Length: 79
Image 1 (cartoon, rainbow, N blue to C red):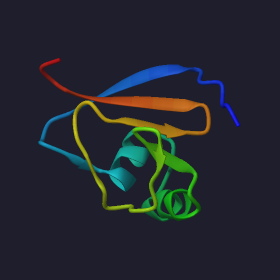
Image 2 (image 1 turned 120 degrees about the vertical axis):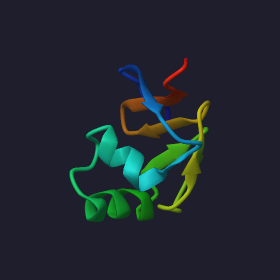
Image 3 (image 1 turned 90 degrees about the vertical axis):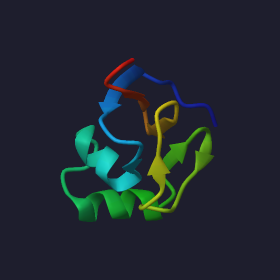
């Protein structure tokens, strides 16, 4: 099944990585950590094209995260 993506949003992080559940909150996809956990455990979140069920997965600059029609490209503040 193909999903039509609205567009890619860039989110810059300051450290080496951000945990997947924290990224979903930062991107306003999940309003709470509990909601992020459910989205991830349900298999609704993709990282670099693959379903990810690890809420603590380290997301680094260059990774692409998708939930439904939202695509997030993680970058650094430098670029």
